[in-house]
Length: 292
Image (cartoon, rainbow, N blue to C red; front, side, top):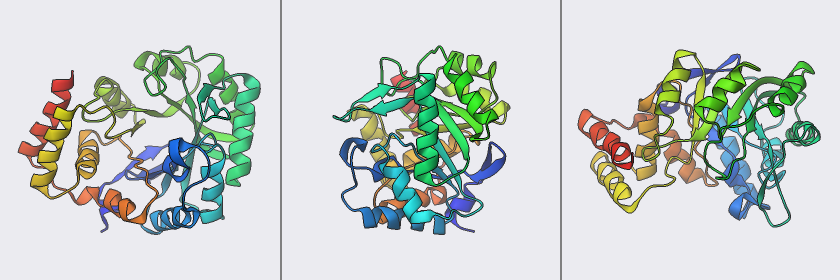
């Protein structure tokens, strides 16, 4: 059994996917804008990920923009039957690479059509509606209507199979669930940023996936020092330990660590082999307690 298989699976829409997936954001250029430094390496990373058992890729056509989806298509199309590609809509990039809301009916429809065209798909398995608040990475309280109703109509047209939501508070998730079934929530969450603890448990009870991003985002120097000490003791990198803790945190957590190098990809896929004993888990949990 490989490490990625040891991590187990969780439901994502109609499919069971492995809990260690791949996030394509870093395949674009610096600042997630423009072409990659090395397109051939980006293609090699994607192919090795799938060959290693990854069956869940997270992307968006506003990465680049258009860059990552076109690389995914070039590297992997025609796609394996068991590969689940998840994308996001609700934002756009201007000529300087700024992130701007794109939530009108026309913009949402165009975003889905762009994703379909650049990925070479007839329908997208899961589309996350990204909410855009004052903090570009923080959770937004909504409102989710009428944007989500627009996405629901695209699902009725057969362009989308399932709907998720990103950068959403628990309130926004609850409001979204009144409109459409939600199959996943994608938010900032890690050892040091634990605002979604209760939401994760609520979603697990509903068989809904939670997909955290920025597994090392927002750490203070003291928190990083504590993570470094645990990582040194267990013989792993800080990123690996942070990912291993997320796997331990709840069975509905699906990881999407991103990278543009094959060496880093192999480190990410090996995290299920990392053993965290009770002492290590207590030290890691204390990072979040100190941040509260």
